[in-house]
Amino acid sequence: DTEVTQTPKHLVMGMTNKKSLKCEQHMGHRAMYWYKQKAKKPPELMFVYSYEKLSINESVPSRFSPECPNSSLLNLHLHALQPEDSALYLCASSQDREGGAYNEQFFGPGTRLTVL
Amino acid sequence: RKEVEQDPGPFNVPEGATVAFNCTYSNSASQSFFWYRQDCRKEPKLLMSVYSSGNEDGRFTAQLNRASQYISLLIRDSKLSDSATYLCVVNIMNTGFQKLVFGTGTRLLVSP
Image (cartoon, rainbow over all chains, first blue to last red):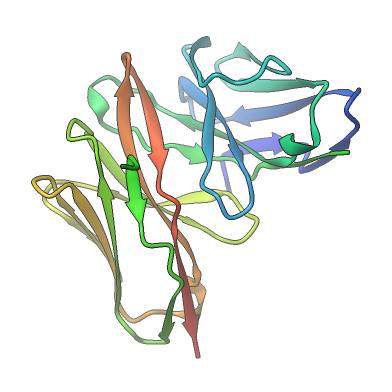
Protein backbone atom coordinates (compact mmCIF):
# COMPACT_ATOMS: atom_id res chain seq x y z
CA ASP A 1 0.00 0.00 0.00
CA THR A 2 3.08 2.30 -0.06
CA GLU A 3 3.26 4.97 -2.72
CA VAL A 4 7.03 4.89 -2.68
CA THR A 5 8.43 1.89 -4.51
CA GLN A 6 11.97 0.55 -4.43
CA THR A 7 13.77 -2.04 -6.52
CA PRO A 8 15.26 -4.49 -6.02
CA LYS A 9 13.93 -5.78 -2.69
CA HIS A 10 17.13 -7.71 -2.08
CA LEU A 11 20.60 -7.34 -3.59
CA VAL A 12 23.76 -9.36 -3.07
CA MET A 13 26.90 -7.95 -4.63
CA GLY A 14 30.63 -8.43 -4.55
CA MET A 15 33.07 -5.70 -3.65
CA THR A 16 34.03 -5.17 -7.29
CA ASN A 17 30.48 -5.01 -8.65
CA LYS A 18 28.59 -1.95 -9.83
CA LYS A 19 24.87 -1.93 -9.09
CA SER A 20 22.06 0.59 -8.73
CA LEU A 21 19.13 0.97 -6.39
CA LYS A 22 15.98 2.59 -7.72
CA CYS A 23 13.19 4.50 -6.06
CA GLU A 24 10.00 5.99 -7.46
CA GLN A 25 7.26 8.01 -5.82
CA HIS A 26 3.84 8.87 -7.19
CA MET A 27 2.72 11.53 -4.73
CA GLY A 28 3.99 14.61 -6.55
CA HIS A 29 6.56 15.22 -3.81
CA ARG A 30 9.51 17.46 -4.62
CA ALA A 31 11.96 16.18 -2.02
CA MET A 32 13.47 12.70 -1.96
CA TYR A 33 15.88 11.06 0.45
CA TRP A 34 18.23 8.10 0.83
CA TYR A 35 18.70 6.56 4.26
CA LYS A 36 20.85 3.68 5.47
CA GLN A 37 19.65 1.51 8.34
CA LYS A 38 21.70 -1.10 10.16
CA ALA A 39 20.08 -3.73 12.34
CA LYS A 40 18.65 -2.41 15.62
CA LYS A 41 19.64 1.17 14.72
CA PRO A 42 17.54 4.10 13.49
CA PRO A 43 17.71 5.23 9.86
CA GLU A 44 20.66 7.48 9.06
CA LEU A 45 20.30 10.17 6.43
CA MET A 46 22.62 9.89 3.44
CA PHE A 47 21.36 12.29 0.76
CA VAL A 48 18.55 14.78 0.19
CA TYR A 49 17.30 15.97 -3.19
CA SER A 50 15.01 18.97 -3.38
CA TYR A 51 13.50 19.94 -6.72
CA GLU A 52 15.89 17.48 -8.38
CA LYS A 53 18.97 19.15 -6.95
CA LEU A 54 21.24 17.58 -4.35
CA SER A 55 20.82 19.68 -1.23
CA ILE A 56 22.35 17.54 1.51
CA ASN A 57 25.17 14.98 1.42
CA GLU A 58 25.84 13.70 4.91
CA SER A 59 29.53 13.06 4.24
CA VAL A 60 28.76 9.84 2.44
CA PRO A 61 31.73 8.01 0.84
CA SER A 62 32.02 8.46 -2.91
CA ARG A 63 31.38 4.77 -3.52
CA PHE A 64 27.72 5.81 -3.12
CA SER A 65 26.57 8.09 -5.93
CA PRO A 66 23.01 9.46 -5.97
CA GLU A 67 21.13 10.58 -9.04
CA CYS A 68 17.74 12.22 -9.48
CA PRO A 69 16.68 11.95 -13.15
CA ASN A 70 13.33 13.67 -12.49
CA SER A 71 11.07 14.61 -9.62
CA SER A 72 9.62 11.10 -9.35
CA LEU A 73 12.78 9.03 -9.58
CA LEU A 74 15.82 8.61 -7.37
CA ASN A 75 18.73 6.27 -7.95
CA LEU A 76 21.67 5.24 -5.82
CA HIS A 77 24.65 3.93 -7.76
CA LEU A 78 26.94 1.58 -5.88
CA HIS A 79 30.55 0.80 -6.71
CA ALA A 80 33.39 -0.87 -4.82
CA LEU A 81 31.35 -1.31 -1.66
CA GLN A 82 32.65 -2.86 1.54
CA PRO A 83 31.02 -5.60 3.62
CA GLU A 84 30.21 -3.01 6.31
CA ASP A 85 27.97 -1.27 3.77
CA SER A 86 25.52 -4.15 4.09
CA ALA A 87 22.29 -2.64 5.39
CA LEU A 88 18.70 -1.76 4.55
CA TYR A 89 18.64 1.21 2.17
CA LEU A 90 15.48 3.24 2.45
CA CYS A 91 14.14 5.85 0.08
CA ALA A 92 11.67 8.48 1.29
CA SER A 93 9.83 11.47 -0.13
CA SER A 94 8.08 14.55 1.21
CA GLN A 95 6.30 17.62 -0.08
CA ASP A 96 9.16 19.84 1.10
CA ARG A 97 6.95 22.82 1.58
CA GLU A 98 8.33 26.05 2.98
CA GLY A 99 7.60 26.95 6.57
CA GLY A 100 8.05 23.54 8.09
CA ALA A 101 4.47 22.41 7.64
CA TYR A 102 3.50 19.12 6.02
CA ASN A 103 7.04 17.78 6.28
CA GLU A 104 6.09 14.19 6.89
CA GLN A 105 8.31 11.77 5.03
CA PHE A 106 6.96 8.61 3.50
CA PHE A 107 9.25 5.63 3.14
CA GLY A 108 9.55 2.92 0.56
CA PRO A 109 9.93 -0.72 1.60
CA GLY A 110 13.71 -0.59 1.23
CA THR A 111 16.40 -2.63 -0.48
CA ARG A 112 18.22 -5.11 1.71
CA LEU A 113 21.81 -5.04 0.52
CA THR A 114 24.46 -7.64 1.28
CA VAL A 115 28.06 -7.00 0.22
CA LEU A 116 30.25 -10.09 0.09
CA ARG B 1 23.69 15.00 24.43
CA LYS B 2 21.94 13.13 21.62
CA GLU B 3 19.63 15.17 19.40
CA VAL B 4 16.71 12.82 20.07
CA GLU B 5 16.62 10.41 23.02
CA GLN B 6 14.26 7.56 23.77
CA ASP B 7 14.14 4.72 26.25
CA PRO B 8 14.92 1.66 24.09
CA GLY B 9 12.70 -0.64 26.19
CA PRO B 10 11.43 -3.22 25.60
CA PHE B 11 8.11 -2.37 27.18
CA ASN B 12 6.27 -5.63 27.86
CA VAL B 13 2.55 -5.06 28.40
CA PRO B 14 -0.56 -7.27 28.34
CA GLU B 15 -3.32 -6.76 25.82
CA GLY B 16 -5.65 -3.99 26.87
CA ALA B 17 -3.02 -2.09 28.83
CA THR B 18 -2.21 1.59 28.44
CA VAL B 19 1.42 2.38 27.71
CA ALA B 20 3.24 5.68 27.32
CA PHE B 21 6.53 6.53 25.66
CA ASN B 22 8.51 9.71 26.11
CA CYS B 23 11.14 11.28 23.94
CA THR B 24 13.37 14.31 24.52
CA TYR B 25 15.02 16.49 21.91
CA SER B 26 17.92 18.88 22.24
CA ASN B 27 17.32 21.52 19.56
CA SER B 28 14.91 24.17 20.84
CA ALA B 29 14.45 25.46 17.27
CA SER B 30 12.87 22.19 16.09
CA GLN B 31 9.52 22.80 14.46
CA SER B 32 8.00 19.46 13.48
CA PHE B 33 7.65 16.27 15.44
CA PHE B 34 6.49 12.80 14.47
CA TRP B 35 6.00 9.30 15.73
CA TYR B 36 6.82 6.52 13.28
CA ARG B 37 6.22 2.84 13.77
CA GLN B 38 8.63 0.24 12.42
CA ASP B 39 7.96 -3.47 12.29
CA CYS B 40 10.85 -5.92 12.15
CA ARG B 41 12.63 -5.80 8.77
CA LYS B 42 10.10 -3.30 7.38
CA GLU B 43 10.23 0.39 6.61
CA PRO B 44 9.21 3.10 9.11
CA LYS B 45 5.58 4.13 8.71
CA LEU B 46 4.20 7.44 9.85
CA LEU B 47 1.97 6.94 12.88
CA MET B 48 1.23 10.53 13.85
CA SER B 49 2.44 14.05 13.44
CA VAL B 50 2.64 15.84 16.79
CA TYR B 51 1.11 19.30 17.03
CA SER B 52 1.53 21.92 19.72
CA SER B 53 -2.01 21.45 20.96
CA GLY B 54 -1.65 17.68 21.12
CA ASN B 55 -3.56 15.32 18.90
CA GLU B 56 -5.42 12.07 19.08
CA ASP B 57 -6.05 9.36 16.54
CA GLY B 58 -8.20 6.56 17.87
CA ARG B 59 -6.26 4.79 20.61
CA PHE B 60 -3.16 6.93 20.08
CA THR B 61 -2.53 10.33 21.68
CA ALA B 62 0.54 12.46 21.08
CA GLN B 63 1.60 15.44 23.19
CA LEU B 64 4.30 18.05 22.74
CA ASN B 65 5.87 20.04 25.56
CA ARG B 66 8.06 22.70 23.99
CA ALA B 67 9.19 24.20 27.29
CA SER B 68 10.62 20.87 28.46
CA GLN B 69 11.47 19.71 24.95
CA TYR B 70 9.75 16.38 25.12
CA ILE B 71 7.18 14.48 23.12
CA SER B 72 4.98 11.67 24.35
CA LEU B 73 2.92 8.91 22.80
CA LEU B 74 0.11 7.21 24.69
CA ILE B 75 -1.41 3.97 23.46
CA ARG B 76 -4.67 2.89 25.05
CA ASP B 77 -6.20 -0.59 24.94
CA SER B 78 -3.03 -2.17 23.49
CA LYS B 79 -3.46 -4.78 20.78
CA LEU B 80 -1.11 -7.60 19.84
CA SER B 81 -0.66 -5.83 16.52
CA ASP B 82 0.78 -2.78 18.30
CA SER B 83 3.98 -4.75 18.93
CA ALA B 84 6.65 -2.83 17.05
CA THR B 85 9.41 -0.28 17.50
CA TYR B 86 8.19 3.31 17.90
CA LEU B 87 10.53 5.96 16.56
CA CYS B 88 10.44 9.53 17.81
CA VAL B 89 11.41 11.84 14.96
CA VAL B 90 12.24 15.53 15.05
CA ASN B 91 12.55 17.80 12.04
CA ILE B 92 15.48 20.18 11.99
CA MET B 93 15.96 22.87 9.37
CA ASN B 94 19.49 22.48 8.02
CA THR B 95 20.67 25.42 5.88
CA GLY B 96 17.16 25.87 4.51
CA PHE B 97 16.35 22.20 4.00
CA GLN B 98 14.57 19.89 6.32
CA LYS B 99 16.30 16.97 7.92
CA LEU B 100 14.66 14.34 10.08
CA VAL B 101 16.57 13.11 13.11
CA PHE B 102 15.44 9.75 14.46
CA GLY B 103 15.58 8.50 18.00
CA THR B 104 16.86 4.99 18.54
CA GLY B 105 13.28 3.77 19.01
CA THR B 106 11.30 2.19 21.82
CA ARG B 107 10.37 -1.44 21.42
CA LEU B 108 6.87 -2.46 22.50
CA LEU B 109 5.83 -6.08 23.04
CA VAL B 110 2.13 -6.70 23.67
CA SER B 111 1.36 -10.17 24.99
CA PRO B 112 -1.95 -12.09 25.21
